[in-house]
Amino acid sequence: MFEKAKRKSTSDIVYHEIRRKIVEWYFEPLEHLLEEQLVEQFSVSRTPLRQALYRLELEGLVFKASNGRIHVTDITLRHAKEIYCAREVLEGALAREASMRITQLELQQLYDKIYLMKLAASENRIMDIVKYGTEFHELIHQLSENETMMRFIEQIDHHINRYRRIGGKFNPYYDPNRPILEHEEIYKAFLTGNADLVESVMREHIRNSYTTTLLAIESYVPK
Image (spheres, helix red, strand yellow):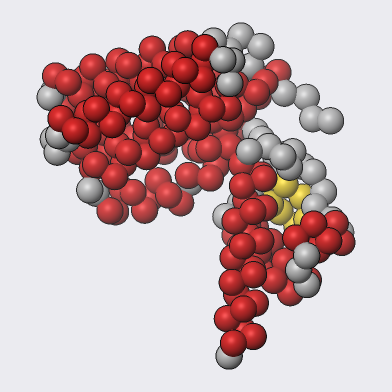
């Protein structure tokens, strides 16, 4: 029983680490994930590694080729459109519900994330801008208290975060101040207490993010 629990724990650790590396682009789209290298890298046996890879395959972050090799799932325009369409609806609805519950303290917490984004931009830390922007959205999700919609967005969250990073990474026209201004607009909408406005501004922000992602995908050239 102990050995079974230990293997499960090891599988979870490997799963989360490989997923992080895919989301953060340490593992590139279509990259071949060699079992031998991963076993050595994580100091684990093949069983927990394969369990982790199977979970990632179910989530669509990796796929098994006809020859049995495991590859990181590609970045495509079609998939981006599907993800962002779903994200726009969910983020808008979550923001609407959060606007009806948010307190002054929580408004300050939202602004603190924007402050961190500005600091990162001043030091040209692009990925940190993305990181704090992600935390801004996650705070809104929590404030909504809508567990059903939060579960829905969690199901595509890893894909969302992967696409979020491509904008700053590969879009040659990426302006680090653009997402900051848009998050400020969302914050200002929250200050009004107008739920319709909050949802509208949030959905516009997601559409703008989608446009940025499309430009990045078109500029991305796999190695």
